[in-house]
Amino acid sequence: MGMSHYYKNLREKVGNELILMPSAAGIIRNEKRDILFQNKGNGEKWSLPAGAIEVGEAPAEALCREVWEETGLIVIPKKLLGVFGGEDFRYKYPNGHKVEYNVYVFDCEIKSGKLSRIDSESAELSYFSFEDMPELALPYPNSLFLQNENKDVYFQWNEQWLKNLR
Image (cartoon, rainbow, N blue to C red; front, side, top):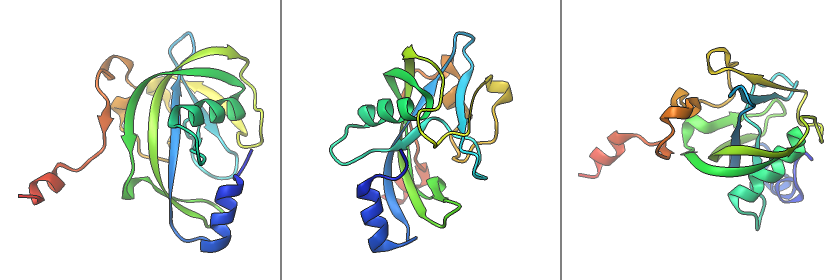
């Protein structure tokens, strides 16, 4: 689908300046438990199927919409695995747009569909084992992808910040 009217209007006002972008991403596994990643084919590194949360949209709804647009799969979010953001999740697109993502990452179950690109945002879709994962555009912790370790929600934060409150 590309950029929504909301983000186009925002970009017309702020140009390439840094904006906060609430987003949702999904960890989607095949029957072999390999993880689905996408490559946009524009020089960016690989990523999870993901995208911006639109005005009026819940994070899980955004996830389902984005996954379908990018992969042709209909998924059901089963569990929130982590919430990420801050400087580590700043990104500069090849066109110069700067964003700082706040990402809700969900563990997903494939309900139906066939792996195929619905829009032009994915040049390549491929499943990878944890051991053979490609280099990712965003610095998700490896533990996020280890299915047996995902018992608690991962909240990204710096414990030093908490110590500074004292």
